[in-house]
Image 1 (cartoon, rainbow, N blue to C red):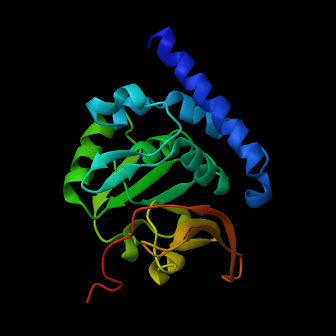
Image 2 (image 1 turned 180 degrees about the vertical axis):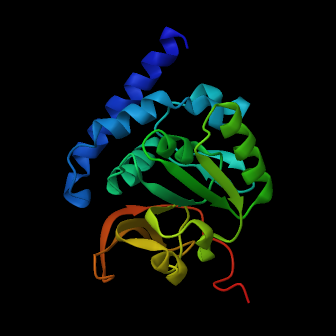
Image 3 (image 1 turned 90 degrees about the horizontal axis):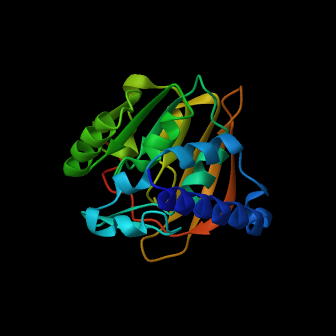
Length: 225
């Protein structure tokens, strides 16, 4: 990696730290865990964007990746990752693989990542990309994210990178007691907000709104029937 690239990453992390401070009244977090920022520092974002946009890989912006999807803004990736308080032994479910960037960041912080995308082409490309880059603790699946992936449940945390009109019940059911689910909620052309749902030791859920956001819609039927 060149000095120029390293400088771009450092500048991006400085922007993320500044934005974390600026949004603290919404998120309740004036700074993100340095482990999370280190993971963003280590993941080569240019590998996860189309070649024509690699010169913008370290802009603090979402970028199109095809199929009507985007790679999320790095600040949002950092925020959502920080909100689950990742631990090295965690198993995390991600809905909306996209290019695989969020999964790669999570892979630096947790034991195992199960990531799903309903778009087979994106999932296939992401799986090949993650394998090539050495992220061997990521399991990429093609499927309806609204239904989650029961085979590896319950999960210590669930991240959803697409907006749903409400929180899918299947995802709540697959969240481990003591776990955290982070999801944007709202309509395609309506206001959306990032929400955090936590499940206590007795299985009761507690929900709070964090921040206004804009995400592509979560697609797929609510049931498999």
